[in-house]
Image (tube, rainbow over all chains, first blue to last red; front, side, top):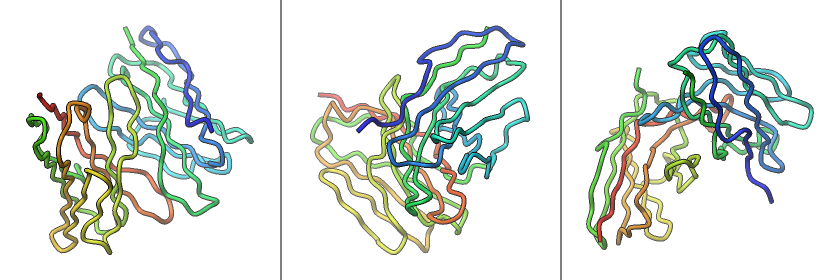
Length: 114
Length: 113
C-alpha cells in the first residue's frame, strides 16, 4: 500500500517564477492538506482540499493556490516566487469520508528560490 | 499567534535515559493531539496520539501524558536509543470539521551512546 507521494523531490527556481508541486494521497484517502516547513520550524498549514474544493486556508497570500483532481491527487501552485518561499513543502492526506482525522505526510518537496 | 508551545527546542540524552518534551495549547477546541517524528530530509511520521478524555497513552517506549485542566501534554521516550535521534513535533487539531494540524516549533533530540 503506497503512502503519500510527492513530486518532484527537489526544485530550484528563480525569484518571480512560478512552480507547481504534486501530491498523490495514501490509498483510500480523499482529503489533501498542504504545509510549508521553513528550516528549523514546524510545518505551517497552507490549505486543505476535499471534494475538489478548497475548504480551509491558512495565513498565506493568494500567490499560493491549489487544485484537487477527481482521483484525489492535488497540486500546489506558487506564483511570483520570493526568496522567503524557500522551504520544504509537505502534503498530508486523510479520510474525511471515513470520519478519520489522522493526517499522514509525504516526504516533501524541497523548494529553493534563488 | 503560537497556538501550540513546545519546549525544549533541543535535547541531549544519554542512551538508556528518558527524553521528555513538553507542550501547551491555548485553543480549547482542539481535541486530538498527535506527536510526529521527523528525520532529516523526510516528512513527519505520526508517532502516537491522544484524545483529552485519556490522561495517559503508552505505545512501546513512547508515552503521552495529558493534563486537560492545565492544557498541557508531554511525550516521554523511555530507554532512549541513538535511533530515536530526530526532531519531534507536538501538534493539535480538531477531530471534527476542518482538520488543519497546528504544530509546535519542534524539539531536536540527540541520543548519545
